[in-house]
Amino acid sequence: MKRLIILFAVHAIVIINAYTAEISGGVGSEYHSRKINSSSVFNPGNVNKENSMEYKVKGSLLLKNEFDEKANGMIKLEAEHCPAAYRKEDEGEKVIIKEMYLDILHEYFSIRAGKQFLKWGDCAFFNISDVVNVTRDPLKEIKDAEGVSFAQLSIPVMSFAAFDFIGIVKDNEADSSSEVPVCFKISASGQNISGFVYVMKEKERNPVQGYSFSVVSSLTNQTSLSVYSEGYFSTESRMKYVNKDYSVDTREKSEYFGAAGGFRLNINFPTIRKFDKLEFTGECCFNKENLNSKEFSRLIEARKTGINISDYYAPYKASLYYGYACVSLNNFIIYSATFSLGSIYNFSDQSCIVLPSLKYAYTDNIDLEIKSELYFGDSDSEFGNALSERNISFSADLLF
Image (cartoon, rainbow, N blue to C red; front, side, top):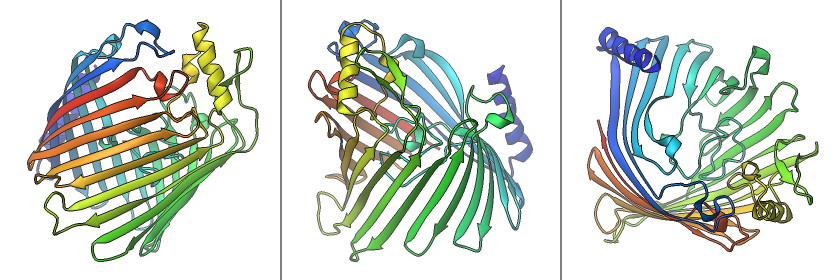
């Protein structure tokens, strides 16, 4: 039924509004291979019977339409055929509504309702202020992120600020309108600085406050620097931790806060033959809500004794401090090739993930990419207990 509805909607938009519709999309395939970490406490000896390869064929379709000067809409669909997956339950075919929304435009305000990925915060990896896209995997590109359902009222203030009221409808979490989280956001921007502050309130929970800002400056004709930071504050936590007796509790009400910050440096090298642009990103993140080293050690010990508490581990939540760095070289050796080398570092146990990748624009609308994830750490560390020791992926995409 879901597929029939999607197909009917697509045909209706194309047939009725073809003369004003903007249509784009793409098709592609992905191959993933990995070495399973049989020493991981979360999958010892591959007890979960996970596979070492995955193959997907994917396609996407985006339709954008300006019905008139006061309304427009957009729908983005993604279809996927996966004959082989790391987990058997992920195999098969599916059609996903990635984004779909309607805009109502007025001189003094605008309304957007539907489903969309809302970029929240300026950090490249640790979007610690993000209270909207809480399930997004930061190892995946933003273009692959699935949107959230929401309704937004935006009121611009002259040309430099806006007030936003956002209601977020999370999947399977709201049975009545009173259970919908509501967020009030004030954003502003100037010549080289931009940012926002927000307050989010859910039923029977204390509010969460947060901020994000960035400053961009041109150091020379060939060099630019962006400095950014984001953070949050709350007096309540949903984080669970393991006690000395291996029981699990939710953190008590207290003051919890987190902050992340970093910089992005871009340097053009017009006279160098091997590459013509370098981009370096560095970030640090602190989150008081995360597990400290003792709490994570108890979680590992509990798993080693056979107690199944894997659900209480979340990636990048096993240390108070993390770091991220990435260097990218554009037009690397050959034109239209981009080489990147990134790393995520856990300061508590010194484990890390190394992320090399090479992307090549074969033509204007064909992209080829090879990338890898390499996990390092001892037997009691976070990334040393990842489900894989290494992953390698190949992808090819045709855009139209």
